Image 1: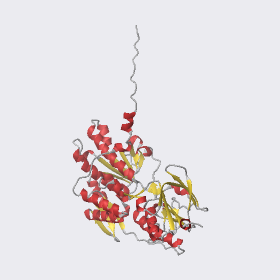
Image 2 (image 1 turned 30 degrees about the horizontal axis):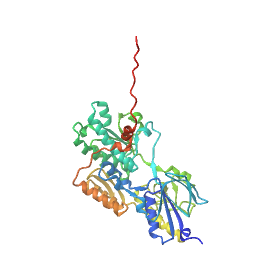
Image 3 (image 1 turned 180 degrees about the vertical axis):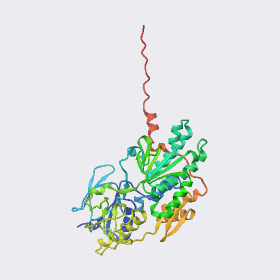
Image 4 (image 1 turned 120 degrees about the horizontal axis):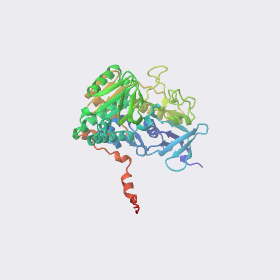
Length: 451
């Protein structure tokens, strides 16, 4: 006789981001006891709330508070820290490679594909060696440490070339991620230089390179122009309708012929679906997204569901032929509908269709500064937009624990300045110990020649 565990419907969730976390929570919340088993596989043991990465990079939020531990948020699920490399859809078997140990096969009845996206890059000379991404909490921490470290370099050196390069910060990509990262980092650097005797804001050069003719297309032309003007007032340079051609040895060459040296090159020029999807035996669209129906089921596969950045989901609210944009607003809502649909299919009921009208867009531009278009077209600027930005994302942040810690960080920031300590050495924490532990190099011997 089989056990209750054997009779449970086995649900495999590949990816622990927005869709993976929220979908798993929804499934476990709606499932009856011993009705399903849920396994979540992700290379990281936590979900990152990406809209808070700019504030984490600027020091307004503690990095640990913008991530949610999967095991804590999903106590009833099996969380595997590893990767799914291949999937046999006919046999319903996934190949899992854990962080350590041998790969093994995992059988499932229903599959949720939530791998999300990765940075979209181009074969630009020098980019892989010198660029810094801005999609993970690790990259946000590294960027903060790097920028503050460059201020230390510039304040200590007497070489004008080293100083000029250290104080030049280039950002490529004028969408939400790029503009928010640029604005928050510039805001942080402006505060930080108050503590340096040999640097002022006028010594620093912040540059944004954008291939389109405008920035922040998500908030519309009017608010995009307003944001552009405000950031220019802060001394930030913009090169629109321009692309990065090369950054070998951190010497940047733009398509309009402009050249400059920059110690910091941040790449935020869009995302693309995770290329691992090609090994999952799924129908993919022209740009590599999983092709799904309005029910969030993969086309031709009733047992497979997909949503978020790795899926092309029909946008029923916008009309025929439209796809939902890859943003957190849709990902969170799709995940909840996906969870409901999985349970409907498990119980033999028809799944519902996903339909959601975009509520707007919000962007933070540093402390007390923001821009937003909300509730069907209401436009907010400055402090009101910044307050709405924080309110919305605090509400959307998963778990009461993390909401409380975020509010605590914001409250403390009202009374104390941001920290300006660079912890760049944390990226190589063993270097000093290894140097101390290594045996001393043998002294050079001098051989004298007798006459």
